[in-house]
Image (cartoon, helix red, strand yellow):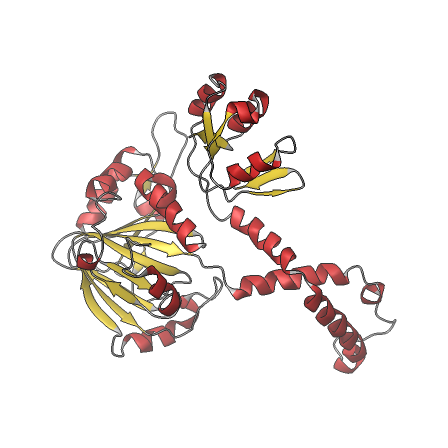
Length: 389
């Protein structure tokens, strides 16, 4: 966080989820050249065999169909939607914006930075890069259903920020449902109308209207989309748990009477009152532990653990000695329940581990094979749970 905002504590208290914030490069520790750049863009689109949806292309405010910039993968590939760098070169020269999606999965420096940001924020993060030719605008005024941190990498881009037309939108409440309101607000005076230079950072809470235009050169920026956990997620889990609870209530399971007219409110009134009473009681009885377990499970599928190499893990497992130092794989979001360690993509039996060893691993401590036992260590390395310290 300290690379993105000057005062993380003040940001958490006064800005997070409330208001946009522009922070200039001069007030931050350094630029972001170590994360991404124009060479990385050319490398990804020309030699990595990207397929959709890892790339989108936009022009004049609209997203182009994938057939405009993809083609077959060549002999033996059997792939019809690989990025075609020749087509992409022509489109970019003609003013199209390139959107490299999910860089938190494809570009190592961004992967590492995103995982640290997830640890700092406690919310899932995805990363896209927007590469815009001079004097071009990729998308019309719109809002996102997630918070964003915009990191200007190269070039300059003018950002025009307007007030929300729908506060804190949920994922199923996109700006396209409010086109007219968005258009009207975009014609009013901006909250922010500034040019981002390399190293500048712009934070936008979800729902904030924005549009950006590249200026005198190619502009490249990273957008870290923060898919915030919110109280509506809690509401979903409360309702789900309450429904599961009333399913055990025979009065709720009882059939409606013969001859009922389900379109008649009077016929339903007494039954609806009973169901409301039972549901309200069930809602109030849902333990917070149940909600934590449910959201924890969703969190486990919302991100990725730190990258792990199958070949390296095999070699590590083959060469274990008593002194080999191991540590829990990063960003695993691990927790223990019913004798199993569960996390992002893993579910392994750890009932044979001593409690202090297991807690030490969960706390990030380094543990030797001698402490774990060779068989257990080998099993956990092979499962991608433990890696070399």
